[in-house]
Length: 295
Image (tube, rainbow, N blue to C red):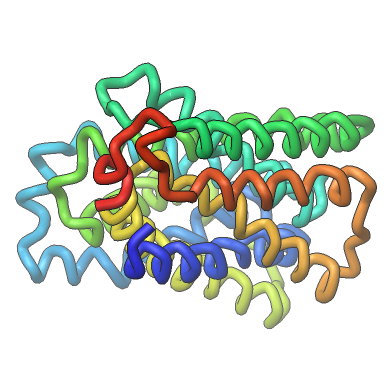
């Protein structure tokens, strides 16, 4: 991984370790559908006028259908499901479940025209990570947790398809325009529900959580994510979901008083080791050219 890729990777790991805590805080007072609206509407208000002013709308029109598809699979559906899931799951467990995205993404990429060989080292890493997630899920099933885990499966699928759409259909479009159009579309879709289900009172803590979700974890994060995809490729970019759970777990324990479970102790180390291996530079012995994965 290049130096620039590493910087983008670390930044995104930190930024995307925050949403799980923030969602857990906000969903105490705000309905999941309303939260999706409140998370996307401010970003749309800030970014859309800027995109229009910089004449970025014309380029988006040529790919309007794919922009809409990306908006739904990366924002519209996963965010609602994740918010609902956090009504049943801890923020830590939610974050660790998202770590299965690289395995699903790698499977999907192998059946598309994107020929990004995994190589032995990265394949072992992905398999170890998958084993960690399997342990995590297997030991966490039961009661309301099962409902949340089922909801999170939709999140995982959406997050796996999103980068594929970017890489195959939207790579030539400006990332700012795609993010702005996507959040604007989702905000419009959720506006009827969100505006009619606004809570009568919210705490300052909830307001702050929603603001950070919108401006930092949405606007800033996806711009970094686009840059990371260009730098290291779509499959490797999703490995960020192996590392940001460490931030989420730490925040959940320190700020929310969540407990470390046996499932986390067994599964999380495998996920971290898998992350490290999956992001290693492949060698010719791995059966893939080095230049193909490390431009």
